[in-house]
Image (cartoon, helix red, strand yellow):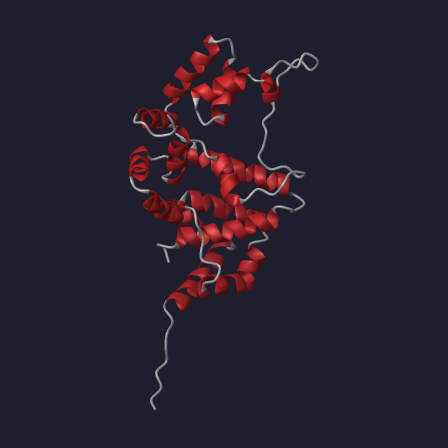
Length: 254
């Protein structure tokens, strides 16, 4: 069960995500979800010196440090793309309001916007390691490919490099391991989804956010096993999983 826990969690999150998209408090729920996903990929060791050097280059070009930081985050630390973004119409001064458009953080979720699949939502939240991007692009890899590799490999530069080296078929196998749920036609999926405890849990915003945090930080599972709601649900899922994966056959004595 622990081996496939990531796929189980991904499945639960993806379904809960869809159910909560039109929740009355969806705006708040998905702001928290965005914070969880962004924070899990943005670590203290995210090479602040690299940030500083990139920001200084943009500041020397006449942009403010705040705008430089925002543009770098939006372009996933692609310096050239950040320069183009800062030079565009979106970043021109709003003389009437005396501010710039980017002073207000733009969240991904919009109550009046189109539905965004969970994989795309997670992709937009991801904050890549800027130094790792520099190393990988200097090795000749495409900037966007480097970002995808880092996202799949949890910002691990060495694993991302190995991922980029293998052929496309192997890449698909690796990415499916980390970013794919259970087969919706499988008996395990059907049994889990038919469980009333799971059904109620997937409509609960608190449980959705906990599952999201657990998916991004698997080592925290021991903390949530003691949670009265999440722990009991995971126990039920574990039992269902094992019953479907390793069915017990009763042999007739006749």
